[in-house]
Image: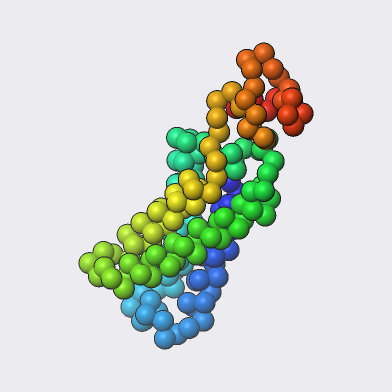
Length: 157
């Protein structure tokens, strides 16, 4: 999960840095301090993404967060998924801020991050299946400790 959150953090820091270097940005109008901006662009999206990733992993476990699973999403794939979720969150937040004026900025950031993170995790990553190998999803019998398909030991979900 740390790699997924690293991808989210990279986009959040990039967006905050971009906004801080542009003095004509609407968020830097002189009435709000810089730490408020960092909280809006880094802390809220990162915390929301972490909470949603934990909730999704507990209620509908994803193979991406299982250390035993080895596939395309392990390593750099999780970072790319985090990057994609955060970019989608900023796109949705920008659209929501333009269309819905009555919601507070913090609520828009939280809603957009929660929705985009949940979409990326639920759509991109397959769920664990009870009694299946976490590496190759081969259906294991009750007595098998070693997967006959991939040769993994102790890979029963």
